[in-house]
Picture (cartoon, helix red, strand yellow):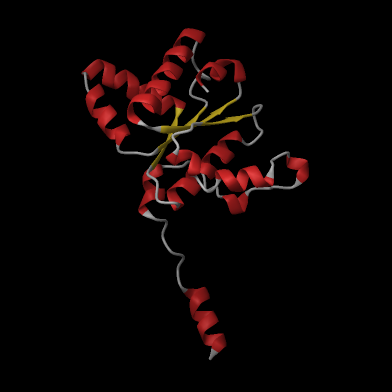
Length: 171
């Protein structure tokens, strides 16, 4: 009888991801359970697990994930986004190109108010190197806008970035 229950459970399709995960639009599946927390990786286990509890989101503290290209910044940013969605926060992930396209559209069609309303409904915005394709002035504009979103709308942001000098003034 116990074997039948195990066989039935194994035959059942996996549970679909919660709506909060689908709405987040993560480009990859990443979770705290997937992280390599071995000492060689250089991630502090206690810090990662504490960040995974998402208290920093309620406190409106942004999170900057720094590291060289190929170090796993995007994966780690998505990991914290996943933890937030699992904890009931509304999360959106944006690639740089999509974010810049959206910003140029709202400038052109005057729908900035609608975009701000949409952003006000989410708790956490995960951005993957939003300044990577920009000149220094464009990068400063984007980072200033993100700072305003945090301060004016209470939007918390996870930023994966490899240039500390670009983001440190906005931390």
